[in-house]
Amino acid sequence: MAKRTKKPAVKPEIRRNWLKRNEEEGESPPQIAKEAKYDVRTVRKQIEVARQEREAREARSIVLRNALERHYEDMRRYAEKLNSQITGMNDSTSSLDDDFIESALRQHLPRSPLWAYLSRLQVLQQRANEGQQVLENKISEIVKKEPALKRLTDAGLDGVVPGIVAVLDAETKQWLDGYSAYTLKDSMIMEAAGEGLVDPRVGFSRMGTMAKEKAVGNMKIVLKALAELEVLVKGIQEYIELEKIIAETERLHSKLREELAIIRLRRIVPGRCKFCPL
Image 1: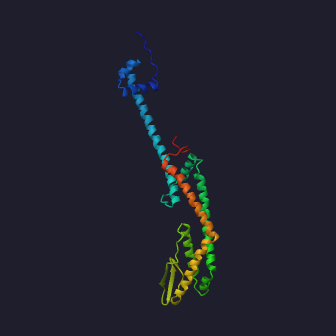
Image 2: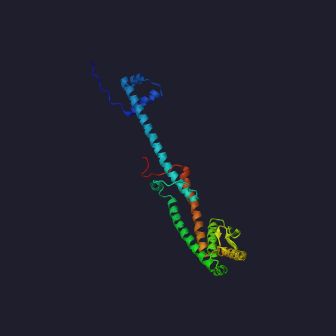
Image 3: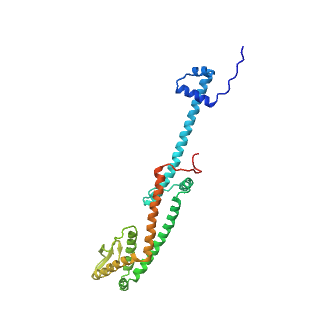
């Protein structure tokens, strides 16, 4: 009786070829076994092993693809959040992982101008906040020195100066936002404040209670002074400096939005980071 020789272990590439022949070319296990000179049971077993290996590869591929898509989506959402903050439509809530996602994005895009822009924006925002406070202090100083308003204050109308300061503070914010023609001087209202008294206000800002018979004359002085102060404030150095800061901030916003749009709309971020699925 001839001695049976043990067949070598079936290599992965061989069983994958058998699976392909079986599925795509329609060869049966007996046909493959006869041609390959293997036991048909071995062929059937190896075809099944190859099928299971393929399914495992496909499952891993799906898991990896899903993880990678979620990773990209995390960074895209972070870019959306930054864009919302820049446009003033910040209705998104902060996440505990925001700092990690920013770190991931920095690792993916280490040479992006986005990081220099964000750093510069932070500086400009700080300067704008400080500049706004300096401007408000300067406005208060100017209004207190306005001769016509000082005469009203000396006559006991203590509400006029703080009232006009509040008006100018509100107006300058509107001017700096681009509404250069904005004014409250045409929105004066007299409100009754008791017998023989009125409480005039300019827009939202009250000028203080005063005698009704003198109110019209007093408010003519107030409104004339306000018109002159509006022109004066637009020309002071503190206002001009703040105007420059805001103009630079707007230019920077445009550059930032362009860089963020690449991340948001491309939806795939090149490069790698320590949080990448592989």
